[in-house]
Length: 561
Image (tube, rainbow, N blue to C red; front, top):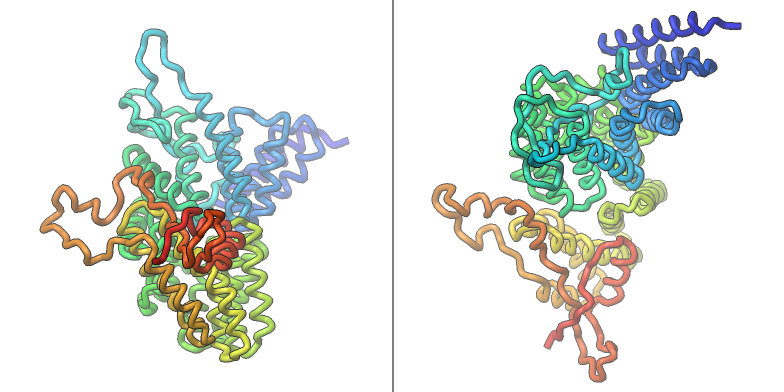
């Protein structure tokens, strides 16, 4: 019979060696050592505490290496273990949510963060009798995480494994997310519960961006940025990265570039190489989207110089995918296909389902250009079905637009009807997204940078197919939609002035003033009031709302005469 004490010593030695390997920059070697330690400790019930500690480290290295299914399995086992320390459950839930998010399990990730928020809120210090409200001290239990950030293995305790930072100086204070700031109490150290609340806020903003819930993402990213700026300015690169990602996703390229450059400077100043690499990948994507490919490639090379040696799987795959896109734009299809293939192998191993689905659209473009239409069709169908299963209606609509564009490019007149069936509902859904954005200038940027290219494709396809009535109805519908503030409609004031900031970005909580979708356009009178009048594009609007789960038009109707 094996001596449990001897096993415990062996497990500790293996764990210490794994920590040393990780610090030395060898995450795979660290993971292997943690795996051996876990196997040694698992058969001994009396070593359950040590076993759970090793599992936390094993999950951290698995996530660092991009093996999110393995990280999820380990963290789920810890959460389900009856002997786990309940005080550490909130921190484990945050790490759990990060891996779930990478795999596209958005509902479960948000549920984990919601539970974490409730536990941390319940653990906040209560005010003394007769005293005013207790100050809430917040900071990240782990540095606010974003693309490219992974947990660090722990030493002697699960608390360290959960990522609790060292606090050398008292932090500023801030209120519970969604409330007013609390009164500063600089003589008190930040409480663990309040630190977790801040970490939850940053993580929830990431979930909202990934789920394309733009109004909620706008609010959460603004709150997270304010909290981190006041309390931990050394970590401001992470929330800035989320602000930049939101601006990029909603077609606001100028502020996206500004925020991304600020995030890069903050990550470099804070010695966060993984964060800096992630920002460089984002900036490269922005440069490619705005026609500045020559500026994108050096950023991609610099990012990969960190992510490849560090074993950051998903970030490396994204870098290769972007390099493949540049190669395709130069007509180097074989090079693009090779880069896409390398990226896919990494993403599939990581279980990064949403990122792999996006890559499938790129691979379909190459297959189409290489004369393999059946393969392109299969890849696009897979991507669209994946986005539908993940609840990402907007991404599915964008995939259908890409599919329609490839059908148009194929030059087969017999495919025009199918291209229109894909493109019209998708373009209507994409155009309708702007009604949920916060300010007129935001809606204008979405319209110009995201919706107008989609609508141009629809008009072109309808004209080529000879569908004059469809063209007429599209014109009528576009003319009847809510007007938006064009960039040059109102002259800018000289100097910043009191209104200057409001011309660029919405004031706090401006999401409350989002414009409602426009009414449906009635083409023929509804004589008896039974709703039997003809509505422009009624079938296409219904199909868009059914396919993508997005509100395209209000239920009200207005006459076109």
